[in-house]
Length: 334
Image (cartoon, rainbow, N blue to C red; front, side):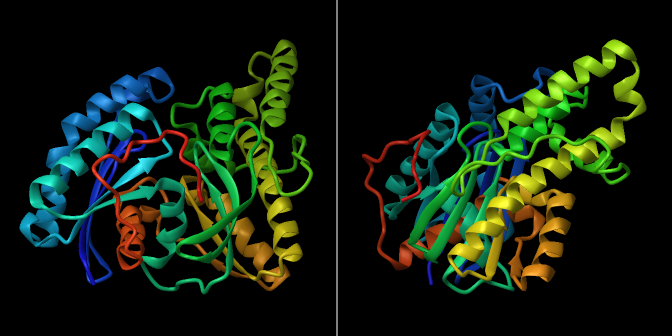
């Protein structure tokens, strides 16, 4: 049961976690506020902020866990996917630290880590299970046969669900990141007042670009008649958009679960924190007789705790990386 230091720097959150004997002892995250003024993540600013935050975050994680760096059995980091500059900062730090300490290096796939976040705390799903991963950059349906054996059976062909939330929220004039603001306002609105198109892709793939375009044209038409339309109907607009995104996700999830005869359903990724999606999945589970698993909020968004959990499985499997390993912004889930 190894002691592992894990580093996550795939986008705009700098995080470090320490796992001891299969238990997360610390999970420290430093967020970057600078991107709010630009309405989205600026890659160059993100990588610079990682350079500033990484040493304090790692120091805090080790201190909170009560672990000295000499006691580590391995150092893990997010290899990809993500922003190249951000990945390089975390990867180079991890490689240097592992080399200096003479410890094994573990390269972790960010999407695998989101899925294996379900094993940090009880209740834990049993293999095999179906995982819907929804984040700012990815939307995937994955059959999880083991910690090291996963198969993507469906994914977005354009925007991810998180992008759909943020981009439509921006059209409504909500601040960045728009997803949480849209979710909050949606709780007060009527989800069926404004019908938007549900993406209907063949197989188990997803598409959200049509929704973004439909919202844009709808708002343009309505504001031409009434410049105050958005403000006067903001809660209903948020609720209707969120309802459409959720129905698109559930449509494919429902089909995949039935076709593959899987009743253990997991939800992962930053959008798993969305209250509407959580409730809709629980409601669907009652109808379909599913058993649903959703990680705690702190392990849904980008964090090093999920990287540490994945590294724990890879350590047991002897899956180590060399110092020649490269960060990969388009790393596939194999």
